[in-house]
Image 1 (cartoon, helix red, strand yellow):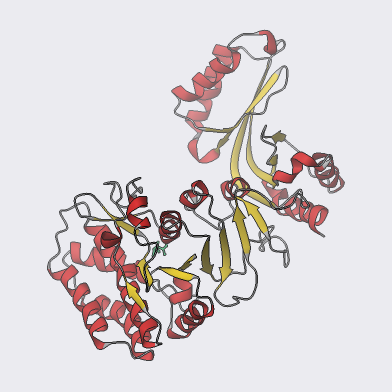
Image 2 (cartoon, protein in one colour):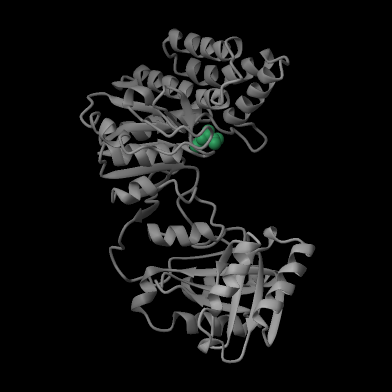
Length: 449
Ligand code: ASP
Protein backbone atom coordinates (compact mmCIF):
# COMPACT_ATOMS: atom_id res chain seq x y z
CA UNK A 1 0.00 0.00 0.00
CA UNK A 2 1.33 3.40 -0.94
CA UNK A 3 0.82 6.98 0.15
CA UNK A 4 1.27 9.37 -2.77
CA UNK A 5 1.90 13.04 -2.10
CA UNK A 6 1.62 15.54 -4.93
CA UNK A 7 3.33 18.91 -4.65
CA UNK A 8 2.00 22.24 -5.88
CA UNK A 9 3.56 22.09 -9.34
CA UNK A 10 1.90 18.68 -9.92
CA UNK A 11 -1.49 20.27 -9.23
CA UNK A 12 -1.02 23.69 -10.76
CA UNK A 13 -3.30 23.28 -13.80
CA UNK A 14 -5.87 20.92 -15.31
CA UNK A 15 -3.14 19.52 -17.54
CA UNK A 16 -0.98 18.68 -14.52
CA UNK A 17 -3.93 17.26 -12.61
CA UNK A 18 -4.62 14.94 -15.57
CA UNK A 19 -1.13 13.48 -15.07
CA UNK A 20 -1.91 12.98 -11.39
CA UNK A 21 -5.15 11.18 -12.27
CA UNK A 22 -3.23 8.88 -14.62
CA UNK A 23 -0.63 8.16 -11.95
CA UNK A 24 -3.31 7.24 -9.40
CA UNK A 25 -5.13 5.09 -11.94
CA UNK A 26 -1.94 3.35 -12.89
CA UNK A 27 -1.33 1.62 -9.58
CA UNK A 28 -4.11 0.30 -7.35
CA UNK A 29 -1.73 0.36 -4.37
CA UNK A 30 -1.99 4.14 -4.25
CA UNK A 31 -4.66 4.32 -1.54
CA UNK A 32 -3.85 7.60 0.18
CA UNK A 33 -3.33 10.80 -1.76
CA UNK A 34 -1.91 13.87 0.00
CA UNK A 35 -2.14 17.16 -1.87
CA UNK A 36 -0.52 20.58 -1.71
CA UNK A 37 -2.32 23.73 -2.80
CA UNK A 38 -2.05 24.54 -6.54
CA UNK A 39 1.45 25.84 -7.28
CA UNK A 40 2.92 27.87 -10.10
CA UNK A 41 1.79 27.18 -13.67
CA UNK A 42 4.75 29.05 -15.07
CA UNK A 43 7.85 30.76 -13.78
CA UNK A 44 6.12 34.10 -13.14
CA UNK A 45 2.93 32.64 -11.71
CA UNK A 46 2.00 32.91 -8.00
CA UNK A 47 1.37 29.88 -5.80
CA UNK A 48 -2.07 29.72 -4.21
CA UNK A 49 -0.44 29.72 -0.76
CA UNK A 50 1.26 33.01 -1.56
CA UNK A 51 -2.03 34.45 -2.85
CA UNK A 52 -3.58 33.36 0.43
CA UNK A 53 -0.94 35.24 2.39
CA UNK A 54 -1.89 38.39 0.49
CA UNK A 55 -5.58 37.56 1.07
CA UNK A 56 -4.92 37.18 4.79
CA UNK A 57 -3.06 40.48 4.95
CA UNK A 58 -5.84 42.30 3.10
CA UNK A 59 -8.45 40.92 5.52
CA UNK A 60 -6.43 41.80 8.59
CA UNK A 61 -5.64 45.28 7.33
CA UNK A 62 -9.27 45.73 6.31
CA UNK A 63 -8.31 46.38 2.71
CA UNK A 64 -10.08 45.35 -0.47
CA UNK A 65 -9.83 41.57 -0.88
CA UNK A 66 -12.48 40.76 -3.48
CA UNK A 67 -10.10 40.60 -6.42
CA UNK A 68 -7.74 38.29 -4.56
CA UNK A 69 -10.64 36.07 -3.57
CA UNK A 70 -11.62 35.78 -7.24
CA UNK A 71 -8.06 35.10 -8.35
CA UNK A 72 -7.72 32.32 -5.79
CA UNK A 73 -11.10 30.85 -6.65
CA UNK A 74 -10.28 30.86 -10.36
CA UNK A 75 -7.30 28.60 -9.72
CA UNK A 76 -9.70 25.91 -8.52
CA UNK A 77 -12.36 26.72 -11.04
CA UNK A 78 -9.95 26.30 -13.94
CA UNK A 79 -9.26 22.73 -12.86
CA UNK A 80 -12.77 21.91 -11.71
CA UNK A 81 -14.49 22.99 -14.89
CA UNK A 82 -12.02 21.11 -17.09
CA UNK A 83 -12.99 17.87 -15.31
CA UNK A 84 -16.63 18.89 -14.94
CA UNK A 85 -16.59 18.17 -11.22
CA UNK A 86 -19.76 18.33 -9.19
CA UNK A 87 -20.79 22.01 -9.15
CA UNK A 88 -21.34 21.88 -5.41
CA UNK A 89 -17.63 21.45 -4.81
CA UNK A 90 -16.74 24.71 -6.51
CA UNK A 91 -19.62 26.49 -4.80
CA UNK A 92 -18.33 25.19 -1.47
CA UNK A 93 -14.80 26.41 -2.20
CA UNK A 94 -16.04 29.88 -3.04
CA UNK A 95 -18.15 29.89 0.10
CA UNK A 96 -15.21 28.80 2.25
CA UNK A 97 -13.07 31.62 0.95
CA UNK A 98 -15.82 34.11 1.53
CA UNK A 99 -16.48 32.84 5.04
CA UNK A 100 -12.79 33.23 5.88
CA UNK A 101 -12.99 36.90 4.97
CA UNK A 102 -16.40 37.67 6.38
CA UNK A 103 -16.19 35.79 9.65
CA UNK A 104 -12.57 36.70 10.13
CA UNK A 105 -11.27 36.68 13.63
CA UNK A 106 -7.76 38.01 13.23
CA UNK A 107 -7.35 38.15 16.99
CA UNK A 108 -6.98 34.39 17.27
CA UNK A 109 -3.38 33.25 16.86
CA UNK A 110 -4.63 30.64 14.40
CA UNK A 111 -6.24 32.95 11.88
CA UNK A 112 -3.21 32.96 9.58
CA UNK A 113 -3.02 29.17 9.75
CA UNK A 114 -6.70 28.87 8.93
CA UNK A 115 -6.38 31.04 5.83
CA UNK A 116 -3.23 29.31 4.54
CA UNK A 117 -4.51 25.82 5.26
CA UNK A 118 -7.56 26.52 3.10
CA UNK A 119 -5.25 26.27 0.08
CA UNK A 120 -4.67 22.56 0.62
CA UNK A 121 -8.08 21.90 2.15
CA UNK A 122 -9.98 23.23 -0.84
CA UNK A 123 -7.61 21.47 -3.18
CA UNK A 124 -8.18 18.11 -1.50
CA UNK A 125 -11.93 18.59 -1.90
CA UNK A 126 -11.42 19.48 -5.54
CA UNK A 127 -9.06 16.61 -6.35
CA UNK A 128 -11.42 14.11 -4.70
CA UNK A 129 -14.11 15.51 -6.99
CA UNK A 130 -11.82 15.24 -10.02
CA UNK A 131 -11.05 11.59 -9.24
CA UNK A 132 -14.76 10.85 -8.86
CA UNK A 133 -15.48 12.56 -12.15
CA UNK A 134 -13.05 10.08 -13.72
CA UNK A 135 -14.87 7.11 -12.22
CA UNK A 136 -12.40 6.50 -9.38
CA UNK A 137 -13.89 5.88 -5.94
CA UNK A 138 -12.22 8.54 -3.92
CA UNK A 139 -13.23 10.90 -1.18
CA UNK A 140 -11.94 13.88 0.70
CA UNK A 141 -11.12 13.37 4.36
CA UNK A 142 -10.17 16.19 6.70
CA UNK A 143 -7.26 16.15 9.15
CA UNK A 144 -9.87 16.52 11.92
CA UNK A 145 -11.66 13.33 10.82
CA UNK A 146 -8.34 11.54 10.44
CA UNK A 147 -7.38 12.50 13.99
CA UNK A 148 -4.22 14.26 12.85
CA UNK A 149 -3.64 15.93 16.20
CA UNK A 150 -0.87 18.51 16.40
CA UNK A 151 0.69 20.76 19.03
CA UNK A 152 -0.62 24.26 19.66
CA UNK A 153 2.09 26.16 17.83
CA UNK A 154 0.68 28.41 15.13
CA UNK A 155 2.65 28.18 11.83
CA UNK A 156 4.88 25.51 13.27
CA UNK A 157 2.79 22.58 14.44
CA UNK A 158 4.40 19.33 15.55
CA UNK A 159 2.55 16.07 15.24
CA UNK A 160 1.49 14.50 18.54
CA UNK A 161 2.03 10.77 19.13
CA UNK A 162 -1.69 10.01 19.50
CA UNK A 163 -2.20 10.97 15.85
CA UNK A 164 -0.61 7.73 14.65
CA UNK A 165 -3.11 5.24 16.13
CA UNK A 166 -5.90 7.55 14.96
CA UNK A 167 -4.56 7.43 11.43
CA UNK A 168 -4.10 3.71 11.57
CA UNK A 169 -7.83 3.28 11.90
CA UNK A 170 -8.11 4.41 8.28
CA UNK A 171 -5.77 1.70 7.10
CA UNK A 172 -8.48 -0.36 5.41
CA UNK A 173 -10.55 2.49 4.00
CA UNK A 174 -12.37 1.35 0.89
CA UNK A 175 -12.12 4.54 -1.10
CA UNK A 176 -8.95 6.28 -2.06
CA UNK A 177 -8.64 9.00 0.57
CA UNK A 178 -7.63 12.47 -0.54
CA UNK A 179 -6.01 14.33 2.34
CA UNK A 180 -4.98 17.98 2.45
CA UNK A 181 -1.32 18.45 3.32
CA UNK A 182 0.30 21.14 5.43
CA UNK A 183 -1.89 21.21 8.54
CA UNK A 184 -3.38 19.30 11.41
CA UNK A 185 -5.83 20.01 14.15
CA UNK A 186 -5.09 20.93 17.75
CA UNK A 187 -6.76 19.28 20.72
CA UNK A 188 -8.97 22.33 21.00
CA UNK A 189 -10.03 21.97 17.38
CA UNK A 190 -7.93 24.74 15.82
CA UNK A 191 -6.43 24.43 12.36
CA UNK A 192 -2.65 24.66 12.79
CA UNK A 193 -0.15 24.47 9.94
CA UNK A 194 3.28 22.92 9.81
CA UNK A 195 6.10 25.14 8.62
CA UNK A 196 6.10 26.18 4.95
CA UNK A 197 6.43 23.30 2.53
CA UNK A 198 4.74 21.21 5.19
CA UNK A 199 2.71 18.95 2.89
CA UNK A 200 5.79 16.74 2.72
CA UNK A 201 5.43 16.34 6.48
CA UNK A 202 1.77 15.35 6.16
CA UNK A 203 2.70 12.70 3.61
CA UNK A 204 5.34 11.26 5.92
CA UNK A 205 2.94 11.26 8.87
CA UNK A 206 0.16 9.56 6.92
CA UNK A 207 2.59 6.95 5.61
CA UNK A 208 3.78 6.23 9.16
CA UNK A 209 0.23 6.24 10.56
CA UNK A 210 -1.31 3.84 8.07
CA UNK A 211 1.92 1.81 7.97
CA UNK A 212 2.31 2.16 4.21
CA UNK A 213 4.92 0.13 2.36
CA UNK A 214 6.09 3.17 0.45
CA UNK A 215 5.72 6.94 0.58
CA UNK A 216 5.80 8.38 -2.92
CA UNK A 217 6.58 12.06 -3.10
CA UNK A 218 5.72 13.41 -6.55
CA UNK A 219 7.35 16.62 -7.62
CA UNK A 220 8.69 18.15 -10.84
CA UNK A 221 12.18 16.64 -10.92
CA UNK A 222 13.28 13.09 -11.70
CA UNK A 223 14.75 12.70 -8.24
CA UNK A 224 17.72 13.98 -6.30
CA UNK A 225 20.84 14.76 -8.25
CA UNK A 226 24.28 13.74 -7.11
CA UNK A 227 25.40 17.37 -7.28
CA UNK A 228 23.81 20.76 -7.81
CA UNK A 229 22.82 21.00 -11.52
CA UNK A 230 23.69 24.69 -11.30
CA UNK A 231 27.33 23.67 -10.78
CA UNK A 232 27.63 20.45 -12.76
CA UNK A 233 26.19 19.96 -16.22
CA UNK A 234 23.65 17.14 -16.30
CA UNK A 235 24.59 15.40 -13.07
CA UNK A 236 23.46 11.81 -12.58
CA UNK A 237 20.55 10.97 -10.32
CA UNK A 238 20.96 9.36 -6.94
CA UNK A 239 19.23 5.98 -7.12
CA UNK A 240 19.27 5.22 -3.44
CA UNK A 241 19.97 7.37 -0.43
CA UNK A 242 19.73 6.69 3.28
CA UNK A 243 18.00 9.09 5.64
CA UNK A 244 21.34 9.83 7.28
CA UNK A 245 22.90 10.68 3.95
CA UNK A 246 19.98 12.86 3.06
CA UNK A 247 20.33 14.77 6.28
CA UNK A 248 24.00 15.39 5.58
CA UNK A 249 23.19 16.59 2.07
CA UNK A 250 20.22 18.69 3.16
CA UNK A 251 22.28 20.32 5.85
CA UNK A 252 24.82 21.42 3.28
CA UNK A 253 22.32 23.26 1.21
CA UNK A 254 20.83 20.47 -0.87
CA UNK A 255 17.41 22.05 -1.18
CA UNK A 256 15.33 18.95 -1.80
CA UNK A 257 13.54 18.62 1.44
CA UNK A 258 12.79 20.25 4.55
CA UNK A 259 15.35 18.43 6.67
CA UNK A 260 12.87 17.16 9.19
CA UNK A 261 9.98 16.53 6.84
CA UNK A 262 10.68 12.86 6.48
CA UNK A 263 11.32 12.15 10.15
CA UNK A 264 7.98 10.34 10.69
CA UNK A 265 8.60 7.90 7.83
CA UNK A 266 12.23 7.46 8.87
CA UNK A 267 11.19 6.49 12.39
CA UNK A 268 8.58 4.10 11.02
CA UNK A 269 11.14 2.56 8.60
CA UNK A 270 9.08 3.42 5.55
CA UNK A 271 11.04 4.10 2.37
CA UNK A 272 10.31 7.28 0.46
CA UNK A 273 10.65 7.66 -3.27
CA UNK A 274 10.97 11.03 -4.96
CA UNK A 275 9.30 10.86 -8.35
CA UNK A 276 8.48 13.16 -11.22
CA UNK A 277 4.81 13.74 -12.07
CA UNK A 278 5.95 14.79 -15.55
CA UNK A 279 7.99 11.62 -16.03
CA UNK A 280 6.50 8.95 -13.79
CA UNK A 281 8.26 6.05 -15.48
CA UNK A 282 11.65 7.27 -14.28
CA UNK A 283 12.50 5.26 -11.15
CA UNK A 284 13.26 8.34 -9.04
CA UNK A 285 15.39 8.45 -5.91
CA UNK A 286 14.64 6.09 -3.04
CA UNK A 287 15.37 7.19 0.51
CA UNK A 288 15.64 4.28 2.93
CA UNK A 289 17.01 3.37 6.34
CA UNK A 290 19.69 1.02 4.93
CA UNK A 291 21.38 0.68 1.56
CA UNK A 292 20.57 -2.45 -0.41
CA UNK A 293 24.19 -2.69 -1.64
CA UNK A 294 27.53 -1.15 -0.76
CA UNK A 295 28.49 -0.64 -4.37
CA UNK A 296 28.51 3.12 -4.35
CA UNK A 297 30.73 4.58 -1.61
CA UNK A 298 29.83 8.20 -2.40
CA UNK A 299 26.20 9.11 -3.09
CA UNK A 300 26.28 12.86 -3.29
CA UNK A 301 28.29 16.06 -3.08
CA UNK A 302 26.89 19.25 -1.63
CA UNK A 303 28.13 22.62 -0.48
CA UNK A 304 27.09 25.70 1.36
CA UNK A 305 28.70 29.10 1.75
CA UNK A 306 28.81 31.66 4.52
CA UNK A 307 31.06 30.15 7.17
CA UNK A 308 33.78 31.64 9.35
CA UNK A 309 36.48 29.69 11.13
CA UNK A 310 38.20 30.59 14.36
CA UNK A 311 41.54 28.84 14.64
CA UNK A 312 43.15 28.47 18.06
CA UNK A 313 46.53 26.88 18.59
CA UNK A 314 48.30 26.34 21.88
CA UNK A 315 51.35 24.22 22.54
CA UNK A 316 50.52 21.24 24.82
CA UNK A 317 46.82 21.91 24.49
CA UNK A 318 46.18 18.18 24.65
CA UNK A 319 47.45 18.01 28.24
CA UNK A 320 45.28 20.81 29.53
CA UNK A 321 42.16 19.33 31.13
CA UNK A 322 39.00 21.25 30.21
CA UNK A 323 40.59 23.27 27.40
CA UNK A 324 37.80 22.71 24.87
CA UNK A 325 35.21 23.29 27.53
CA UNK A 326 36.65 26.71 28.30
CA UNK A 327 36.70 27.61 24.61
CA UNK A 328 33.12 26.49 24.10
CA UNK A 329 31.94 28.31 27.19
CA UNK A 330 33.05 31.54 25.56
CA UNK A 331 31.01 30.69 22.48
CA UNK A 332 28.05 29.92 24.69
CA UNK A 333 28.34 33.25 26.48
CA UNK A 334 28.34 35.03 23.14
CA UNK A 335 25.29 32.96 22.16
CA UNK A 336 27.15 31.58 19.14
CA UNK A 337 26.16 28.26 17.71
CA UNK A 338 29.04 26.26 16.24
CA UNK A 339 28.71 23.87 13.33
CA UNK A 340 31.99 21.93 13.33
CA UNK A 341 35.01 21.63 15.54
CA UNK A 342 37.89 19.69 14.05
CA UNK A 343 40.91 19.46 16.32
CA UNK A 344 44.55 18.36 16.37
CA UNK A 345 46.89 17.79 19.32
CA UNK A 346 47.73 21.44 19.72
CA UNK A 347 44.98 23.20 17.83
CA UNK A 348 41.29 23.45 17.36
CA UNK A 349 39.10 25.18 14.76
CA UNK A 350 35.60 26.31 15.50
CA UNK A 351 33.42 26.80 12.46
CA UNK A 352 30.33 28.92 12.70
CA UNK A 353 27.77 30.43 10.33
CA UNK A 354 29.09 33.90 9.54
CA UNK A 355 25.64 35.46 9.72
CA UNK A 356 25.86 35.22 13.53
CA UNK A 357 28.78 37.65 13.63
CA UNK A 358 29.20 41.36 13.20
CA UNK A 359 32.50 43.30 13.37
CA UNK A 360 32.07 44.40 17.01
CA UNK A 361 31.03 40.98 18.20
CA UNK A 362 33.93 39.42 16.35
CA UNK A 363 36.44 41.74 17.95
CA UNK A 364 35.03 41.12 21.39
CA UNK A 365 35.01 37.36 20.87
CA UNK A 366 38.64 37.27 19.79
CA UNK A 367 39.68 39.53 22.63
CA UNK A 368 37.92 37.26 25.07
CA UNK A 369 39.50 34.10 23.66
CA UNK A 370 42.93 35.74 23.76
CA UNK A 371 42.41 36.72 27.38
CA UNK A 372 40.94 33.48 28.70
CA UNK A 373 42.86 30.93 26.68
CA UNK A 374 46.14 32.72 26.02
CA UNK A 375 46.72 30.91 22.72
CA UNK A 376 49.98 30.87 20.75
CA UNK A 377 48.02 31.60 17.62
CA UNK A 378 44.54 32.91 17.11
CA UNK A 379 42.96 33.86 13.81
CA UNK A 380 39.65 34.09 12.07
CA UNK A 381 39.04 33.27 8.42
CA UNK A 382 35.91 34.45 6.60
CA UNK A 383 34.16 33.62 3.35
CA UNK A 384 34.51 29.90 3.69
CA UNK A 385 32.36 27.33 1.97
CA UNK A 386 31.88 23.82 3.24
CA UNK A 387 31.94 21.12 0.62
CA UNK A 388 30.74 17.76 1.75
CA UNK A 389 31.18 14.35 0.19
CA UNK A 390 28.47 12.04 1.48
CA UNK A 391 28.10 8.27 1.48
CA UNK A 392 27.62 5.62 4.14
CA UNK A 393 29.54 3.21 1.94
CA UNK A 394 32.75 5.15 2.67
CA UNK A 395 33.12 3.06 5.81
CA UNK A 396 33.76 0.03 3.67
CA UNK A 397 36.09 1.68 1.18
CA UNK A 398 39.63 2.88 1.73
CA UNK A 399 40.87 6.01 0.02
CA UNK A 400 37.86 8.27 -0.44
CA UNK A 401 39.54 11.11 1.45
CA UNK A 402 42.78 10.51 -0.41
CA UNK A 403 41.01 10.54 -3.79
CA UNK A 404 39.18 13.73 -2.85
CA UNK A 405 42.18 15.64 -1.58
CA UNK A 406 44.36 14.51 -4.50
CA UNK A 407 41.75 15.71 -6.98
CA UNK A 408 41.30 19.03 -5.20
CA UNK A 409 45.07 19.51 -5.01
CA UNK A 410 45.42 18.94 -8.76
CA UNK A 411 43.06 21.90 -9.23
CA UNK A 412 45.06 24.02 -6.78
CA UNK A 413 42.18 24.15 -4.33
CA UNK A 414 43.49 25.04 -0.91
CA UNK A 415 41.90 23.18 1.98
CA UNK A 416 41.42 25.31 5.07
CA UNK A 417 39.92 22.44 6.96
CA UNK A 418 39.11 18.74 6.67
CA UNK A 419 36.62 17.09 8.94
CA UNK A 420 35.42 13.55 8.86
CA UNK A 421 32.53 12.89 11.23
CA UNK A 422 33.10 9.82 13.40
CA UNK A 423 30.07 8.17 11.84
CA UNK A 424 31.98 8.16 8.53
CA UNK A 425 28.91 9.25 6.60
CA UNK A 426 30.62 12.32 5.21
CA UNK A 427 33.89 14.15 4.74
CA UNK A 428 33.82 17.89 4.85
CA UNK A 429 36.26 20.32 3.28
CA UNK A 430 36.47 23.97 4.21
CA UNK A 431 37.58 26.02 1.20
CA UNK A 432 37.42 29.59 -0.01
CA UNK A 433 34.09 30.45 -1.48
CA UNK A 434 35.56 31.44 -4.87
CA UNK A 435 36.64 27.84 -5.32
CA UNK A 436 33.35 26.24 -4.33
CA UNK A 437 32.02 25.54 -7.82
CA UNK A 438 35.33 24.22 -9.02
CA UNK A 439 35.58 21.95 -5.99
CA UNK A 440 32.11 20.52 -6.57
CA UNK A 441 32.85 19.86 -10.22
CA UNK A 442 36.21 18.31 -9.43
CA UNK A 443 34.75 15.96 -6.84
CA UNK A 444 31.85 15.10 -9.10
CA UNK A 445 34.16 13.99 -11.90
CA UNK A 446 36.29 12.10 -9.40
CA UNK A 447 33.47 9.92 -8.14
CA UNK A 448 30.84 9.87 -10.84
CA UNK A 449 32.32 10.17 -14.26
N1 ASP B 1 1.36 25.08 0.24
C1 ASP B 1 2.25 25.11 1.36
C2 ASP B 1 3.44 25.99 1.06
O1 ASP B 1 3.54 26.54 0.00
C3 ASP B 1 2.68 23.75 1.79
C4 ASP B 1 3.23 22.85 0.74
O2 ASP B 1 3.04 23.07 -0.46
O3 ASP B 1 3.91 21.88 1.10
O4 ASP B 1 4.28 26.16 1.92
